[in-house]
Length: 169
Image (cartoon, rainbow, N blue to C red; front, side, top):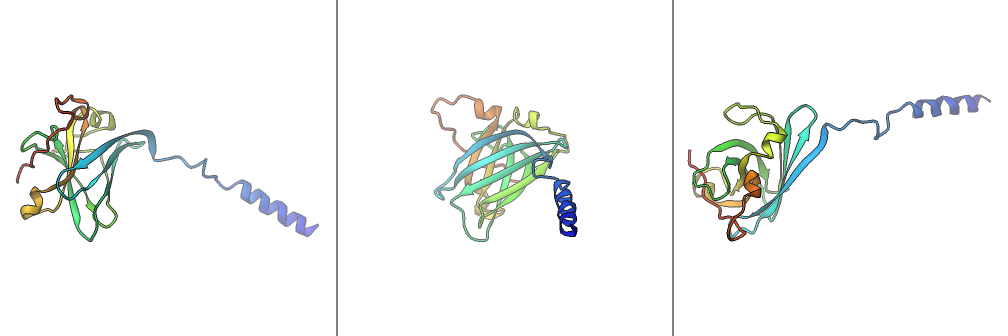
């Protein structure tokens, strides 16, 4: 009988534990994925996913294929589409770890300290460019890039957008 009492207590304790279904996600479920095309002879491609968070912020997750080593590839969110020469940098995202090909950044402000929400971001005329390096000639090499927001939906006569170099600062 004593063993039965212990089993009932254990069963009650387990039943009161929160299940994985009870855990509330930090994300709303709204997300948009954009392809990143190779920007150079390095043959790097991938995706950037923008996820809306319940706290009003946005998480950007970049996953690249074709990177390796211990480099950190700078990531810029630029105003304007990929072909916009000297496009202003709206936000510096977390560099991509070349070993994993991954970057994750959570934000709710652009570099000029203006607030940006997920709905505003997916309407923004912008692009994402991943550079080979931070300084020197490597800064001018774009290994992967893609249009986002309204730049993504903008029609191009050839079907492929050219990639302009970034504004040097």
